[in-house]
Length: 111
Length: 115
Image 1 (cartoon, each protein chain N blue to C red):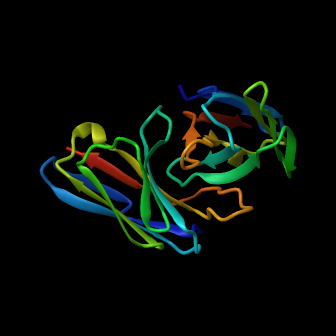
Image 2: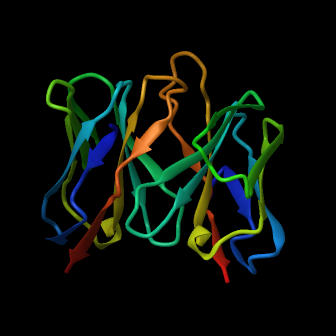
Image 3: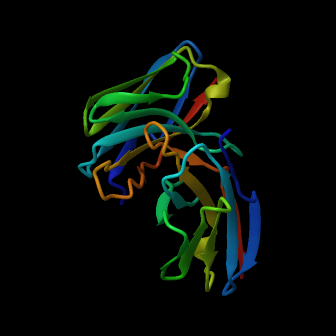
């Protein structure tokens, strides 16, 4: 079956570093996405990994290991505005390349 | 500011009502989607339209009826819904062209409450 696992909730302190893990089991693979969703707002695209390794974009980095079915999102120098839900999604290469989402990780940043 | 706009943002309806959700994208994309977001559940894909043709229907009940009159507009027609259909309905669009990541651009959603 198709399954995406990520922690339900995490907390961290302003200025710290936090790593949000995501593991997946899907019938196909054609890329992994991370989205950020603030309460009451639309999810917004953060990163995309299709090859193994680390993709860095400012304070955010995303890592992928296809052999392990594993990704993480790394947030550095945390700010209060980083409090949000972080959604991991895998593009299923079978059929129409639809995205399969995890339940999301709700991150709370405290001063 | 999002390139995908949804109306209405909030909707309350009875189980016998008929209503519609509207989505419009201003990004020139060629694919549009409806997702359902319920508390503590993953985003669930409901419908996919690519080049105005429906290419995916994830076994959604017939009380949900999509319509895609052109590449910029997507509707979700609702009738005889159940209370468990109460959720946030998200519209998204993407560019399915060669070389792109196909990332989704979401609207802010329509919060539906079925009484």
